[in-house]
Image (tube, rainbow, N blue to C red; front, side, top):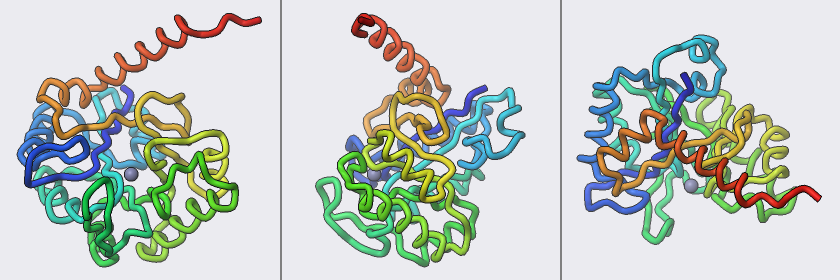
Length: 243
Ligand SMILES: [Zn+2]
């Protein structure tokens, strides 16, 4: 079965926001995952780096968290650990250990020691570039700096290889894909519908206001299949006739 890669951003003790899932809702998501019998797999496994993952006939779900906000350490990791679930954090390296305006609010990000502790606990720490820019707008030099600067900093902090990069805002083009490969990443991740490939792996966003039914459809890959079908139909209906 295909692996479903879910994309979270942050958790919140307060009400739902588009990119913040309240703690009670996240707890419910993890309980639903546990009850579904799905295997929660690592990012390496989800990306096909392990043969066992590719052979599995069971639903596999990979949990990812973008940006590297501190609430992954304080709120998400304890709930994940209660279920024995692993997850991957895509860290924007310029924010490590800082509190900065981000996504409309002051946000505190994971520190070096938190990243090291999470890595030692079995969570994957991977790249969300250096400064979280729209990569499709950058010059080739700036693009390479975003890619390689972030990778080398994380490898220095963790003492472990970093193979995965998630593109900020999910935006990418051919130059971005080439830069990811050139910087030494093996896999790149976008958001939403994108052509399948090692540097264009789709993820399904989980939002703060998702109903239990919406989460269930996302978790089982049904929402992704419906979205792909919709995109395929749209492409066929609106495609310019070949001249
Ligand atoms: Zn982001």
